[in-house]
Length: 535
Image (cartoon, rainbow, N blue to C red; front, side):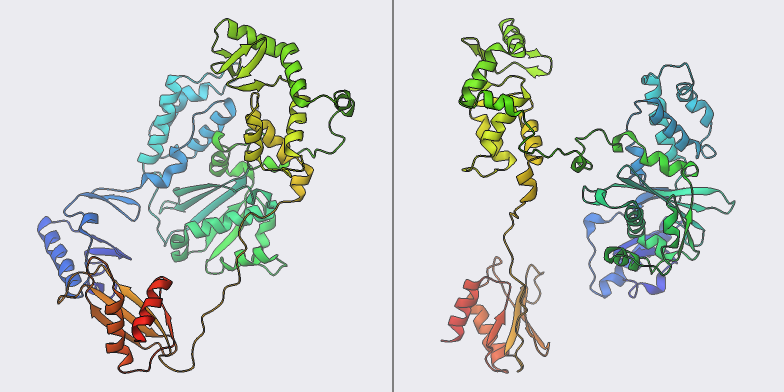
């Protein structure tokens, strides 16, 4: 595209890959420019997708930028980290948000008046209470940060600042630049959570990983900058990253990606990283509890043979599990309270829904399943009997839940079974792969003689031209010589007879009979093709 339209480049149009934007101040000239570009594309047989084109508009989106006749704005997706900022629930979150907004107070008119109500909530002896007024101010501040030209278009001639930080398994980066008045403006924000495997990395590798993510995400902008990029991090050990030192294999693989960029790593303490720290400490990325999958591996209790109370087990060793559950169902206080709630026609008791619960002969049931009392030892005993028996051989979570659900039920049953199996000592030691073993890839043989080994494929769904609508490509895999054969395919159906005739007429007439044919068609098609060729 650049070669085709090079003589008009930067005069009245800009191009990036297959994206073209034509601009002018006068509508009459603008129409002339459009016709000029369209005619040039037609001369070289390039076709445009009319459904993706806009003509004679005063506002459009080009390369993630909202461009109009008066102004240039960033697309709202570039500010997704700010737009998706969740509602503030406590004083700490409020302080982080105000610190973040305070950096941009010089760009927002009447900033102090807008945030006055929010600042009052941070004062001592003031009870934090989030109301409708605070929500309106919160939404208004996010909108003002996006609409008031806080974000600017990237300029490769300006000094670039890259701030990165990793906190609580979330990574955030801020790309900024200085303007002509030496005022720092943010260009774009980027935030990404770590996977459960990446959470196991050491802090050095985590900080290095977010550097790689930043350069991969903003590769085009950072590659074109003329001035050395200043990268601020809060991990001082990474300052000597690009110097000669011993690195692990994956660290060496990461560092090789940075060799194309001109940057300098600089240390900056947490107190100076106001913007980036506010992003990494949002409420929706903070770790809630042990249920968070990013730290789930840290909460584990190995269940040994001595974990459960042996005395209690020996007491009822000759008594079946069913009888133990039935007896506990009758005498357990919580089961008694549930039966009384059902008798009063209540639909819920504390966190337990009683819609499917019923009683018979003072026995509590859930559907057709026997309710197990709130006895952790009894629940563990039941799971132990089902999960650890030799016939099942330590089945997985789904199968264990399915077997227990046939006859028994209790609140949060799946969670209890999941906890037991994840802490089972034998299950933790033997993690058998469930994937089918794949054989090693074998490369195709290439014959020593030309046209003994050919590759064949059809190019279909073309526009009709001289009564043809498809092309058969045949390539010699040794010499790379090729034949392009025009053909007709009716309703995308390719017959073996036509294919065999074209091979004989265009290939075997001038070359010897091939010994090997490579194609993406199924084996049945190739088998019948050889059958026709050998007649």
